Length: 275
Image 1 (cartoon, rainbow, N blue to C red):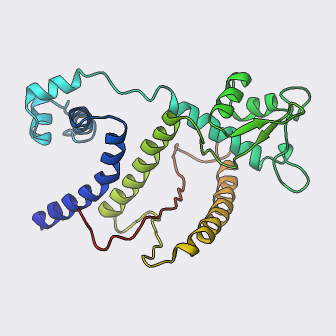
Image 2 (image 1 turned 90 degrees about the horizontal axis):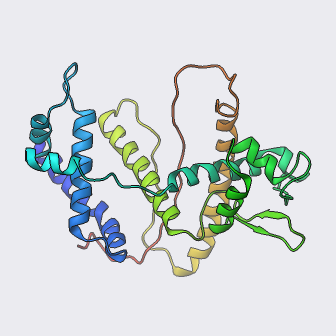
Image 3 (image 1 turned 90 degrees about the vertical axis):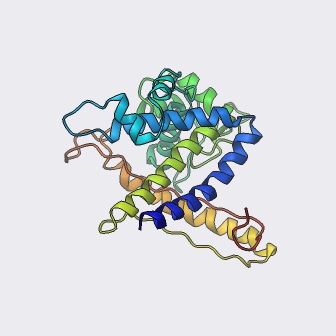
């Protein structure tokens, strides 16, 4: 049974790594750098999640669990931690501001669409949007960030117009790469949960066909964009009404992070699992 799982995991990891390695090579990341990052994660996870209850995790046990020598465990522990240069914080801040702009009737017109906002003045302006959905973040800095990634633009009359109903940076490689880390991690964590807890699975579905004509793709992309966006906005509205950052008095205990991700994919069919 163990050999079957190892074989299946090896095949799955090989498939998982192909697009990741393609991305790494395209951006000049050599194997040694990837190897050190992988070792660091092995050591961190073994230290934080695989200790014996009631006992401090030792380097010797980490060495046994990971297969790395004690010397190598110590070396990778001393490596500087990678930084996303604030991309994660920018992602969360921008996503909250855009979501508030889309769903809050105060910032919508009579048809429910986000209105163009003046930067300041009155209760319906960009500064008030930032105050409500991004706390004490400087309004000018948030505007600069949203413009940098192509989420908003300035109209000829000087107002600020929302271009995206969700946070999808058109520019800014660090922000797109931050999404790679967060979203892929969430998907893998969901699959891991479903493997370990089949009695209480998390929702994970995919629909895929491998013989679609090229002419059908534009219509499919449009259909996916429209229906997926509508679903996400409905779920966003439901969750925001219960999120205690926005509604501190909402009843309940604990603090959970939960969400739903949808993505579209396409490629030329190559037939089988070519390597």
